[in-house]
Amino acid sequence: MNLCTRILIVDDDAGIRGLVSSFLEKHGFQVDTAADVPEMRGKLAQNAYALIVLDVMMPGEDGLTALRELQRSSGPPVIMLSAVGTDIDRIVGLEIGAEDYLAKPCNPRELLARIRTVLRRASAPPAAAPLAPGPESSDTLCFAGWRIDLTERVLYDPANAVVSLSDGEFRLLRAFTQHPRRVLQRDQLVDYALGSDSDSYDRAIDVQVSRLRRKLSFGDARADLIRTVRNEGYMFVPAVTRG
Image 1 (tube, rainbow, N blue to C red):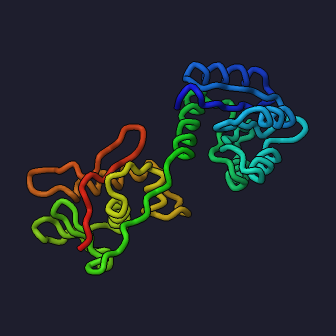
Image 2 (cartoon, rainbow, N blue to C red):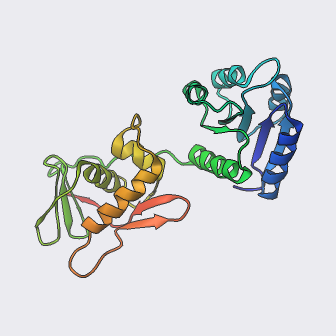
């Protein structure tokens, strides 16, 4: 994030507004606050915001009503805060369109981490399209001496021996080989490898990557085919060719 990143905190509790805004400003954000939904509308008319932190329970118009309005107008991403914090409230907020949901009181450091994650996701470039099929051997991808047959779902090591992969490991390797040499965030890998409707969470990808790395070792050398990019995700390093 940079010093131009502006965030709006909407909460009827003056103490929370002051605490959160002060903490975020110390970490490089520009922060405005609003005590209710009408004041939020006024702020939005005056400034462009990268993200809104929105309380659910407020007098007058509540946060969920405001969230619906923001979704209709293609407003900035929203993180919801709620003193209720039940599963039903969280699910409703997420289904309406909130990017994340935290129960109050929350640790400001956790809120900061969630904000950074949402902003990274919002600013990430569109995912590269999978490699276009070639005229021949379009279902086979080769990298660093390895070969994966996408139709037969079989991986061959540099000695042409078959390497057994679980379904999750195959899907993950397929995602990497179809999007080589670019950083893929964990939530992107969940979508690519498991589908956008998957119940898996991003940290589960770390486990899958660790297992896949072990499978992609050969002989005494363990080539760094999958590189960890700190605070971002993973990158598949080798060039990938068809057939």
